[in-house]
Amino acid sequence: MSTSTDAEKARHAFLEFQNRVCDQLLDEDPTCKFVEEEWEREEGGGGVTRAFAKGGSLEKGGVNFSDVQGTELPPSATQNRPELCGLPFRAMGVSAVFHPYNPYVPTSHANIRYFEAGPEDEPVAWWFGGGFDLTPYYPFLEDVIFWHKQAKSVCDPFGDDLYPKFKNWCDQYFFLPHRNETRGVGGLFFDDLNLEDFDRTLEFALKVGNCFCDSYFEIFEKRKTTPFGQKQRNFQKYRRGRYAEFNLVYDRGTLFGLQSKGRTESILMSMPPEVSWTYGWTPEKNSPEEELYRSYLHPRDWLKEKA
Image (tube, rainbow, N blue to C red):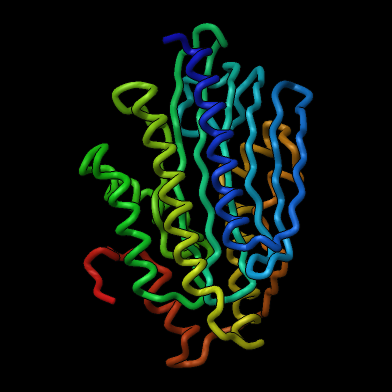
């Protein structure tokens, strides 16, 4: 199987996955305003941005596909692979992020991606990456346990060691050192992944993406009508600030997109629509807001918990 054929196979599968995510979202919230833009990148490649806003339950979201080529991998892509510095590359992926109105529905993010480094007809390296994570504001323990059970179930057929490895990697990656807290309750994160062969690794990446769709929209449907007031909405906007801080300071996908001169509007699609920063804010004692900080913003073995 040639490498170029493999890349095209990944491209076709990723575009199908983008369609699936969008279809599931519109099934869940058919009133979403929907904009699609196809774009091209001067150095090579392009993508399809699908932006959603002002639905009945979804405030803002996006599902983006990109497939870009370049003459030299940017620093964010060679951070863990210095031997690839200076090589041409092809990078493709699908990313999804959802910011609901209701503070009892978590924000969530997922992506799957594929990289090749080296000449197009004979790359010296290829790998897949991806994962998903959940960022609740008013978490329900049963939802968090469900989320991690689903994550484990998608990993186990590919190796018993994958869920604990990728779960821990997610906890470490989605961490804000300057706040000394995780962004949310985690999920899966993997990078530089080669399983037995290309097809097996592509299969895993797609199943991770599909697991995200099924798991997130089940939680979305379950919580979207939970009553809330202005206090909960204000806290949601405050906590969204952490989401913005992570994406702008630490997220490798954001850095890669900007360093590779990608489409800025699409790269920053993941930012929340309304955010607030309040100086010196602290939660009231024994409040639901304090419970988030006390029990959910540090790594835990969620599969040992009981709802």
